Image 1 (cartoon, rainbow, N blue to C red):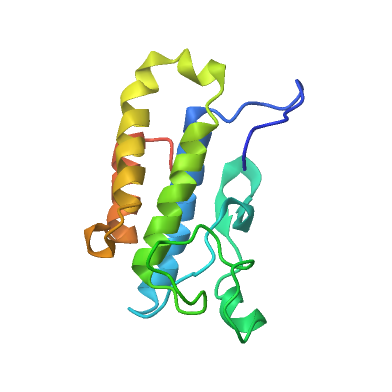
Image 2 (cartoon, rainbow, N blue to C red):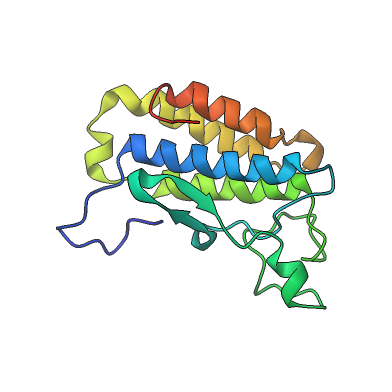
Length: 162
């Protein structure tokens, strides 16, 4: 997902594409959370986000940490929330934290080309504020993935699709 080490023939991740990735990822995690209050992904990280044609994001490795290892292992967990002790028991709020780190990652690989477009600056700041709220040290202060999905759609406007 990151744009580092790009050749000159590879297109930059535009702001619209970044919003599509954020929205698609949030929607995928929201779906997992909709399966029940104890349902969480547990392994959210950029390498588990696959991009299809037109940069539609798909979340992979759902529940892989519970299937692969009978003991907790830090190698399998994505961006770990501070309260996570056992990687096999990750809450929805821990998924929100991990998603917030993923948003920060999307925001920290800005290309100089992106910064030339002043009209996206406010959206970038709003997405940064959302990422910061997702990564709160206190799980009870983190909003739900449904609320995150709605906020990303509101922040980005029309470039995302359902």
